[in-house]
Amino acid sequence: MLVQHPFVLLLDRYQRKAHYFIAKIWASLSVTPFLRIKFEGLDNLPSPDTPAVYVSNHQSFLDIYTLLTLGKPLGLKQDWDILFPIIGWAMFMMGVIPLKRMDSRSQLKGAFSVAAKTRVPIVPITLIGTGKIMPPGMEGILNFGSVRIVIHKPVEGSDPEVLCSEVRNTIADVLEQQS
Image 1 (cartoon, rainbow, N blue to C red):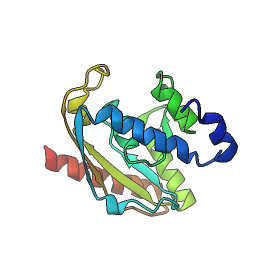
Image 2: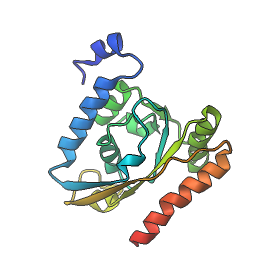
Image 3: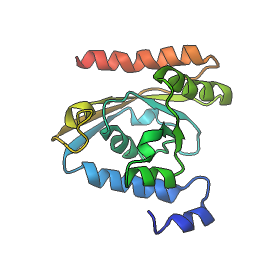
């Protein structure tokens, strides 16, 4: 990724498709020996040329790798992730915008405000199993297992509060079924 970065800046500065392609391969190769990923609802993903905001639940550091296997751009991320060696640098080169985390409520509302103001759909994504494979606070430990990624139908609207509630309920319903 480091070698191709100058060429990407010259030829594909804003979309950075080559970076996302390499990130998808890298993430897949990193996690494939340890886990099986089962995708559900891939038909709910918007076409590659359609802008969208992707919102998922967060269980562990493994979520980043798991979401990268989708091959979709990650636009906003907590600022501390950018500081991690290798993955943080890769995210920086891909153009990920670091979020300054004040509190989780303001951060979440930011994603929904952006979607409402720009009138782009929000794609809710439920991650199941990443917390068991790589428990929070145990980033160096990777257990074997399977992860389920459920991609829900896009949600549209102009009220950030309503969008937040609808997406949260969609993700929570699937998580409750797993308990």
